[in-house]
Length: 199
Image (cartoon, rainbow, N blue to C red; front, side, top):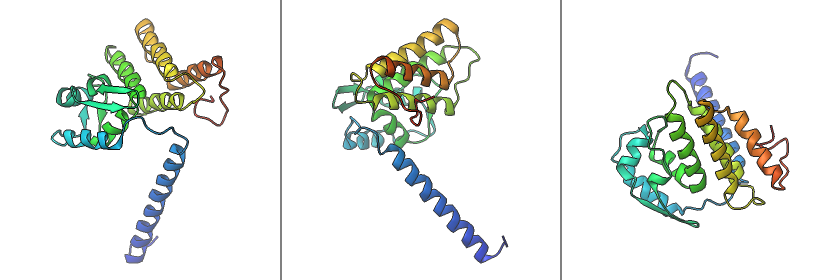
C-alpha cells in the first residue's frame, strides 16, 4: 500500500473496522453472562475513588487506598480488600479494570485467593494471560445456572490454592479448566466442547 493520504486513510479505516469487529465479538461473548451482581452506580463510585491513584497500580496499592470501601451486591456487602489481592503480583491498568473485577464478587474473591497464594511462591511467574484464563474459568463456572450459587467457583479456587501450597507451582490454565469441567459434570451440568470449560 502506498504511503500517501489515501493509503493512510485506508489503514485507519481498516483499523477502525477491526476494532469494531473485536468490540462486537467481545460483546457477543459476554452476551451469555449472567447479570452482574454489583450495581453500576456502586462501580462508578469505586472508579471515582480510584482516580487519585497512578495506573497501572498493583492490587496492594489499590487495597491500601480503598480497601475499606464497601460495595453492595445482590449477595451482600463486600469490602474491596476482600475482593482484590493484597499483592504486587497482579496489576490493574485503569479504574475500569478494577471495577470490572469487583462487579462479580465470587470471581473476584477467588482470584484474590489464587493471586495471594501464587505470590507466596519464590521465582514463580503468574503472567497476565494465565491470570485472565483463570478469571475466565471462574466466570464460566459462575455463569452456570444449574450449579449451586458460587460453590463451583469456591471449589475450583480451593483446588488451585491447595495445588499451589502442596506442589509449590501454579497449575496450568488448561488444568484449571479441566477441573472446573469435572466439577460441573459431577454436579449434573454437562459441559459442551464449544464452551470455554470444554477442553
